[in-house]
Image (cartoon, rainbow, N blue to C red; front, side, top):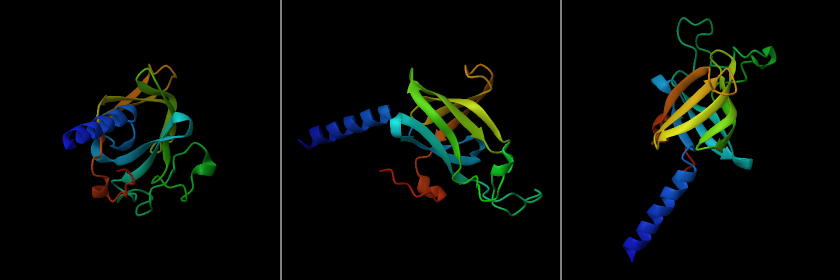
Amino acid sequence: MKKIILGFMFLMTSLIFAQDGYIGYWMMPKGKFIINIEKIKDNEYIGHVVWLKDLYYPKGDKMEGVEQYDRNNPDKSLRVESRKVMGLLVVGELFEKDSKLQGGWIYDSWNGKMYHGSAKLLDENTLKLRGSFDRWGILGLSQKAKRVENPEKYGIISNEK
């Protein structure tokens, strides 16, 4: 009986993962930062920066020692030290369609650019994020993010379990 119950629990966990495989913590290339992808109302997927390799601007930067903020935003009113990169919404308005997330945007705070966004799971631990100049996704850049299995290792307090 225990095997049947454990098997059922494993099946249910697998089905939940298959439905919400996008949800979780994702390390961007070169280990520069981690975003948390979550699903909110109306089945929209969004992502916030939850960890930065360099929380403060590095030695030699004109803002050396200051916590990184959205200093390159094209909207001058948003280039304020109170608008930190940590916690910044960088992925939004993505909705699942045709086995991928699409229709949204991706914001790159390091250059202050907003892109048309899409995302696709390549496998359970690899997420391909694409930021495009055009809404069809033809001209742009893709990056592969890796799932973070142990967010506590990075000081992230996870409420997933």
